Amino acid sequence: MKQSKVTTKSKSGLGSLALTSVLLVLPLFNSEVDFGPAIDFLGRFHPLIVHFPIVLVLCTVLLEWLFGSFKGPIGIAIIKMMYQGSVITSIAAVIAGYFLYRSGDYGGELVKYHFWVGVSVAVLLVWCLHFRRKYARTHRWRWRQLSRFLLLLAGGLVMLAGHQGGSLTHGPDFD
Image (cartoon, rainbow, N blue to C red; front, side):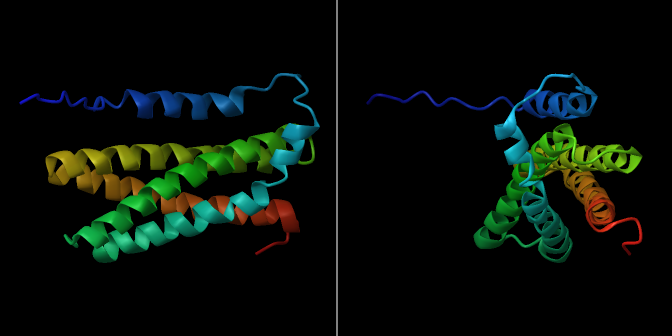
């Protein structure tokens, strides 16, 4: 009988580290290169895209804290999809936000602060998912608690970023 060779993914966190590095360098990349109208067009989708991570992160916080210890396969699959969706959509929102920022339509200190908060949310979610996966492999309580803490912190920051985005869109008197 022939045995198949099973390959496993690296569990070292290098992917999370590389993604974090890219996200943290993005706000510092301030060259005078004109990306063209196509990138400006994609940046205009930021206000639409950004609603996905807001909802997903807050729903993930709610589901994790209410049903995180649920051991059924459906509950585990739903929470896993929520974590992954939060990470993917937050990264998409950061990239679209960067394109919008580079278009020159927005400026000032609030935009920079908003962008850094958005990047922080994405970075926290990358590591949150990393530690959640580590918990799923090892069932060590500390990885779950660290993941939950980072998720809660990301939830707070996503509300702050949402409020700042509202102030940018609707004016400084937005409450």
